[in-house]
Image (cartoon, rainbow, N blue to C red; front, side, top):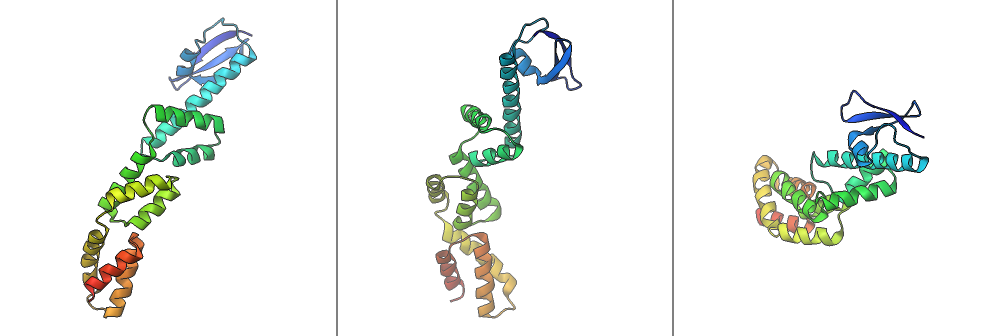
Length: 204
């Protein structure tokens, strides 16, 4: 078999490859150069398979890079998204390896960024932070270490939130305030012990 024509697609980053005068496949120009494809080149089925696998891997890598262009993600999130797209396990593993080599994914860095963001902008407590990170596939060891590092002022943050929120309950009796304020802090993700201490302090 011989490559008889290589032509550009409307997308200038892609080309169509013709074998024995018939259209064979379309590939990214990066793959064209990687495999040194050119007109009159003799190829076989095994080589074509390698080229198409390279094209699939390139597409998978670009998909993952696009996901990361919006925000940091955990390894599990990347894997789940790629699974949903139908990529093979080998392709996903290769993409994860590529991303780690480029230092584009790191679950510890992701967890730290996630926690700092949710504390600073949403005032979340450690319980909710833990549940969210577990749901994103971050390991318990990493979660526990990062929570300990960034959530040592849990009581102070909860007290600050509650002190502001209690003003909106000024027309309620003590029992109603206790119930509403407790529910508010619970939804924010604070632990039972922290909530109890805050309510006892504010409503004594």
